[in-house]
View 1 (tube, helix red, strand yellow):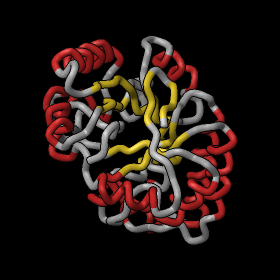
View 2: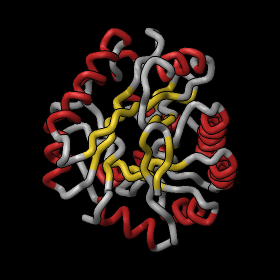
View 3: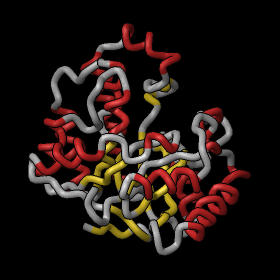
Length: 261
């Protein structure tokens, strides 16, 4: 691995579907030759929204404390940063803003996991794809991604083409390109999320053609494994760097909500 390489998308058990302590994730990153990590666990949301899959409001300080403890334990050996993966769901922006104002974060990913009431990336609900028109689905999804970009709440958009997770690919691609225009206009980055290589689609987010389109627009990529266990830290980063560099893209990271690289 090269110097100054960060894994900037990682979770903790507080989200309810991950294993391993922040210290174990940090050790895995050190063993992989990374320079740093940024934890981005699923932030608290209103009680009615996606409750089983994220930390609760009362756990936020525990999350902060656990990451800061890992930072102290690895001082001088690995840089440990503190971030969040926030959700964009229309109507919850004020709540999200309040959580983001509650602490000095290093990096905030804005992700869309729901289209209306449908958690489209949840394997439990994959049958719903059979009832949906894929063109309409992707147009709706990318409209939400544009909305996320326009809020000004986030530093990067998460797993940009997530609805392909189970192999349901965008039939036209125009809405994705329009969303990339908004990302570029707003000066945001993209989460280059290697978890896609672990999913049925067997492809990182974003896909190679979207990686090229983003690079052409000057959009930076923040490497992230979306690790839910220490074994996934730094997953397929060599392949990720190749996909980015092959199209002239650049890798960036964030500290104190400021982009570097």
